[in-house]
Length: 114
Length: 115
Image (cartoon, rainbow over the protein chains, first blue to last red):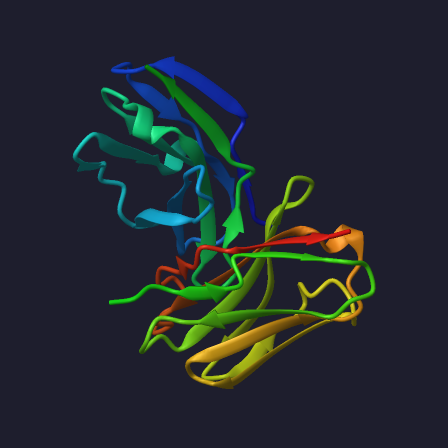
Protein backbone atom coordinates (compact mmCIF):
# COMPACT_ATOMS: atom_id res chain seq x y z
CA UNK A 1 0.00 0.00 0.00
CA UNK A 2 1.06 3.55 -0.62
CA UNK A 3 1.27 6.14 2.10
CA UNK A 4 2.50 9.70 2.65
CA UNK A 5 3.42 10.88 6.12
CA UNK A 6 3.84 14.47 7.18
CA UNK A 7 4.74 14.13 10.84
CA UNK A 8 4.80 17.86 11.54
CA UNK A 9 1.23 18.91 12.19
CA UNK A 10 2.01 22.57 12.76
CA UNK A 11 5.11 24.73 12.60
CA UNK A 12 5.44 28.30 13.80
CA UNK A 13 8.39 30.50 12.83
CA UNK A 14 9.25 34.14 12.86
CA UNK A 15 9.54 35.96 9.56
CA UNK A 16 12.91 35.56 7.81
CA UNK A 17 13.62 32.22 9.48
CA UNK A 18 14.28 29.20 7.28
CA UNK A 19 11.87 26.31 7.71
CA UNK A 20 11.83 22.73 6.44
CA UNK A 21 8.67 20.70 5.99
CA UNK A 22 9.18 16.95 6.10
CA UNK A 23 7.55 14.38 3.85
CA UNK A 24 8.11 10.62 4.00
CA UNK A 25 6.45 8.28 1.53
CA UNK A 26 5.93 4.54 1.18
CA UNK A 27 5.56 2.61 -2.03
CA UNK A 28 6.92 -0.57 -3.56
CA UNK A 29 6.58 0.79 -7.08
CA UNK A 30 9.76 1.97 -8.77
CA UNK A 31 8.05 4.59 -10.92
CA UNK A 32 6.16 7.30 -9.12
CA UNK A 33 5.83 11.06 -8.83
CA UNK A 34 5.88 13.29 -5.80
CA UNK A 35 4.14 16.63 -5.46
CA UNK A 36 3.84 19.55 -3.10
CA UNK A 37 0.70 21.67 -2.94
CA UNK A 38 0.03 24.81 -0.92
CA UNK A 39 -3.36 25.60 0.62
CA UNK A 40 -3.45 29.24 1.78
CA UNK A 41 -6.13 30.51 4.16
CA UNK A 42 -8.38 31.27 1.18
CA UNK A 43 -8.70 27.50 0.70
CA UNK A 44 -7.58 26.73 -2.83
CA UNK A 45 -4.92 24.12 -3.56
CA UNK A 46 -1.95 25.53 -5.43
CA UNK A 47 0.50 23.28 -7.24
CA UNK A 48 4.15 23.93 -6.31
CA UNK A 49 6.30 21.15 -7.72
CA UNK A 50 6.33 17.70 -9.32
CA UNK A 51 9.30 15.33 -9.13
CA UNK A 52 9.66 11.85 -10.66
CA UNK A 53 11.28 8.91 -8.94
CA UNK A 54 14.24 8.82 -11.32
CA UNK A 55 15.31 12.38 -10.73
CA UNK A 56 16.96 12.93 -7.37
CA UNK A 57 18.38 16.32 -8.22
CA UNK A 58 17.46 18.98 -5.74
CA UNK A 59 15.38 21.80 -7.11
CA UNK A 60 15.36 25.47 -6.22
CA UNK A 61 12.74 28.01 -7.17
CA UNK A 62 13.32 31.39 -5.59
CA UNK A 63 13.02 30.97 -1.83
CA UNK A 64 11.70 27.42 -2.22
CA UNK A 65 13.85 24.32 -2.48
CA UNK A 66 13.14 20.62 -2.46
CA UNK A 67 15.35 17.74 -1.38
CA UNK A 68 14.43 14.30 -2.74
CA UNK A 69 16.24 11.30 -1.24
CA UNK A 70 15.15 7.85 -2.34
CA UNK A 71 17.41 6.22 0.24
CA UNK A 72 15.26 7.62 3.01
CA UNK A 73 12.00 7.88 0.99
CA UNK A 74 11.82 11.55 1.75
CA UNK A 75 10.88 14.62 -0.24
CA UNK A 76 11.43 17.61 2.03
CA UNK A 77 10.53 21.20 1.29
CA UNK A 78 12.52 24.17 2.57
CA UNK A 79 11.44 27.79 2.57
CA UNK A 80 14.32 30.21 2.96
CA UNK A 81 13.76 33.59 4.60
CA UNK A 82 10.11 32.85 5.28
CA UNK A 83 7.48 35.54 4.84
CA UNK A 84 4.05 36.03 6.34
CA UNK A 85 2.51 35.20 2.95
CA UNK A 86 4.00 31.72 3.24
CA UNK A 87 1.52 30.95 6.01
CA UNK A 88 -0.57 28.06 4.70
CA UNK A 89 -1.11 24.34 4.93
CA UNK A 90 1.35 22.43 2.76
CA UNK A 91 0.53 19.00 1.39
CA UNK A 92 2.90 16.40 0.05
CA UNK A 93 1.36 13.87 -2.35
CA UNK A 94 2.31 10.73 -4.23
CA UNK A 95 1.02 9.19 -7.44
CA UNK A 96 2.06 5.95 -9.04
CA UNK A 97 2.78 5.51 -12.73
CA UNK A 98 0.04 2.88 -12.77
CA UNK A 99 -2.65 5.09 -11.26
CA UNK A 100 -4.17 8.53 -11.54
CA UNK A 101 -4.92 8.67 -7.85
CA UNK A 102 -3.12 11.34 -5.81
CA UNK A 103 -2.38 10.13 -2.29
CA UNK A 104 -2.04 13.06 0.06
CA UNK A 105 -0.31 13.42 3.38
CA UNK A 106 -2.20 14.98 6.25
CA UNK A 107 -0.59 18.36 5.68
CA UNK A 108 1.64 20.68 7.73
CA UNK A 109 0.24 23.99 8.85
CA UNK A 110 2.93 26.68 8.67
CA UNK A 111 2.45 29.93 10.55
CA UNK A 112 4.94 32.69 9.83
CA UNK A 113 4.73 35.44 12.43
CA UNK A 114 5.84 38.98 11.69
CA UNK B 1 -5.88 30.69 -19.26
CA UNK B 2 -8.68 30.22 -16.78
CA UNK B 3 -8.12 27.61 -14.13
CA UNK B 4 -10.58 25.06 -12.89
CA UNK B 5 -13.86 26.74 -12.03
CA UNK B 6 -16.18 25.49 -9.32
CA UNK B 7 -19.58 26.69 -8.20
CA UNK B 8 -20.96 27.49 -5.80
CA UNK B 9 -18.05 28.45 -3.55
CA UNK B 10 -20.18 27.98 -0.44
CA UNK B 11 -23.34 25.96 0.04
CA UNK B 12 -25.42 25.68 3.17
CA UNK B 13 -28.32 23.28 3.11
CA UNK B 14 -30.50 21.27 5.42
CA UNK B 15 -30.33 17.56 5.93
CA UNK B 16 -32.33 15.67 3.35
CA UNK B 17 -31.97 18.26 0.62
CA UNK B 18 -30.35 17.62 -2.76
CA UNK B 19 -27.03 19.34 -3.37
CA UNK B 20 -25.36 19.80 -6.75
CA UNK B 21 -21.77 20.93 -7.09
CA UNK B 22 -20.44 22.08 -10.45
CA UNK B 23 -17.05 22.06 -12.11
CA UNK B 24 -15.57 23.37 -15.34
CA UNK B 25 -12.13 21.86 -16.04
CA UNK B 26 -9.25 23.59 -17.76
CA UNK B 27 -9.82 23.59 -21.51
CA UNK B 28 -8.00 20.75 -23.21
CA UNK B 29 -7.66 18.61 -20.12
CA UNK B 30 -8.91 15.06 -20.63
CA UNK B 31 -9.11 14.00 -16.98
CA UNK B 32 -11.35 15.35 -14.27
CA UNK B 33 -11.19 14.44 -10.60
CA UNK B 34 -13.46 15.05 -7.62
CA UNK B 35 -11.85 15.14 -4.16
CA UNK B 36 -13.28 15.68 -0.70
CA UNK B 37 -11.41 17.29 2.18
CA UNK B 38 -12.42 16.72 5.80
CA UNK B 39 -10.61 17.14 9.08
CA UNK B 40 -10.95 13.46 9.87
CA UNK B 41 -10.01 11.92 6.53
CA UNK B 42 -7.96 14.64 4.85
CA UNK B 43 -8.01 14.82 1.06
CA UNK B 44 -9.48 11.79 -0.64
CA UNK B 45 -10.33 10.99 -4.24
CA UNK B 46 -14.00 10.31 -4.87
CA UNK B 47 -14.15 9.67 -8.62
CA UNK B 48 -12.38 10.53 -11.83
CA UNK B 49 -13.33 10.77 -15.50
CA UNK B 50 -11.41 10.31 -18.72
CA UNK B 51 -12.91 11.91 -21.82
CA UNK B 52 -16.23 12.29 -19.96
CA UNK B 53 -16.37 8.61 -18.96
CA UNK B 54 -16.18 7.62 -15.26
CA UNK B 55 -13.11 5.44 -14.78
CA UNK B 56 -12.86 4.85 -11.05
CA UNK B 57 -15.63 5.64 -8.59
CA UNK B 58 -14.36 3.43 -5.78
CA UNK B 59 -13.96 6.46 -3.54
CA UNK B 60 -17.59 7.50 -3.73
CA UNK B 61 -18.83 6.99 -0.16
CA UNK B 62 -22.29 5.64 -0.89
CA UNK B 63 -25.21 5.61 -3.27
CA UNK B 64 -26.31 9.04 -2.17
CA UNK B 65 -23.38 10.40 -4.17
CA UNK B 66 -23.40 10.52 -7.95
CA UNK B 67 -21.23 12.28 -10.53
CA UNK B 68 -21.70 13.02 -14.19
CA UNK B 69 -19.72 14.60 -16.97
CA UNK B 70 -22.10 15.30 -19.88
CA UNK B 71 -19.40 17.04 -21.92
CA UNK B 72 -15.73 17.96 -21.84
CA UNK B 73 -16.31 21.27 -20.12
CA UNK B 74 -18.75 20.42 -17.35
CA UNK B 75 -19.15 17.99 -14.48
CA UNK B 76 -21.49 17.71 -11.52
CA UNK B 77 -21.31 15.99 -8.17
CA UNK B 78 -24.71 15.39 -6.63
CA UNK B 79 -25.62 14.36 -3.12
CA UNK B 80 -29.18 13.22 -2.55
CA UNK B 81 -30.26 13.19 0.23
CA UNK B 82 -27.57 15.18 2.00
CA UNK B 83 -26.53 14.41 5.59
CA UNK B 84 -24.55 16.45 8.15
CA UNK B 85 -21.56 14.10 7.75
CA UNK B 86 -21.29 15.20 4.12
CA UNK B 87 -20.10 18.61 5.32
CA UNK B 88 -16.68 19.11 3.76
CA UNK B 89 -14.79 21.00 1.09
CA UNK B 90 -15.20 19.42 -2.31
CA UNK B 91 -12.48 20.02 -4.87
CA UNK B 92 -12.52 19.46 -8.57
CA UNK B 93 -9.21 19.00 -10.42
CA UNK B 94 -8.20 18.40 -14.01
CA UNK B 95 -5.12 17.22 -15.87
CA UNK B 96 -3.97 16.59 -19.41
CA UNK B 97 -3.81 12.90 -18.61
CA UNK B 98 -1.30 11.97 -21.27
CA UNK B 99 0.48 10.25 -18.42
CA UNK B 100 -0.91 9.15 -15.10
CA UNK B 101 1.59 11.43 -13.44
CA UNK B 102 0.54 14.64 -15.18
CA UNK B 103 -0.03 17.41 -12.70
CA UNK B 104 -3.56 17.80 -11.40
CA UNK B 105 -4.69 21.42 -11.11
CA UNK B 106 -7.32 22.13 -8.51
CA UNK B 107 -10.27 24.47 -8.43
CA UNK B 108 -11.01 26.75 -5.47
CA UNK B 109 -13.32 24.21 -3.86
CA UNK B 110 -16.91 24.26 -2.66
CA UNK B 111 -17.42 24.42 1.08
CA UNK B 112 -20.55 22.43 1.86
CA UNK B 113 -22.33 22.68 5.18
CA UNK B 114 -25.27 20.37 5.84
CA UNK B 115 -27.30 21.38 8.89
